[in-house]
Image 1: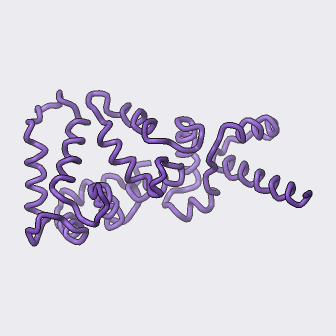
Image 2: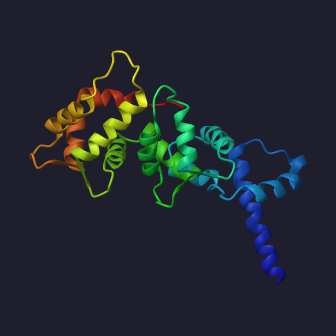
Image 3: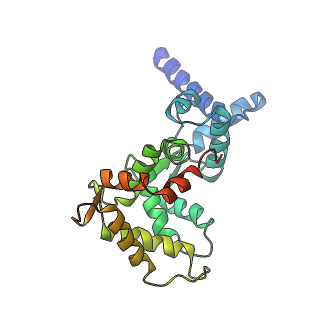
Length: 226
């Protein structure tokens, strides 16, 4: 029995240590108070800092900054889709970002359990901001492939384009035409659907993007954002 209690205490201490390592602001004087408070309010503990450094391309300091922001918005340690939409909407007050935020949440929710942990968030963010061109293109393809069947249809791309136009708002300048999303999709497929079978595969997507100078330049803008 004593052995079990000791093991539980050890796991508890390690869990708190990992969180404090990420937070970077632990105060030794409030040990017992924080222990009780954190264990009662946090339902998910992030991986240790060293493991997250191995899994991502962020430095220790960057992970600590990201964790403080995530913990501030999501004290429980995970974010559900409704909360994710609320947070995301703050960046696009002029439009309706809910549908695009849904697609984005699906891309971050790699375990398909209806929630995004800090690990899910930083691993995805690391790919978007620090990944290779192939890593980023694969992540983008996964975002557009809504039903995850390995190809992008015109309907899926149209849903994405409509959500982006909704998010940008109706009062942008110059004003967007209602048929603009569909025109964008037609242009997209003319460039990428090489065999004209009505769908875009991952190989077609990557090859077309790598040959498009504008797409390559836009991806390089993300380098060293944080």
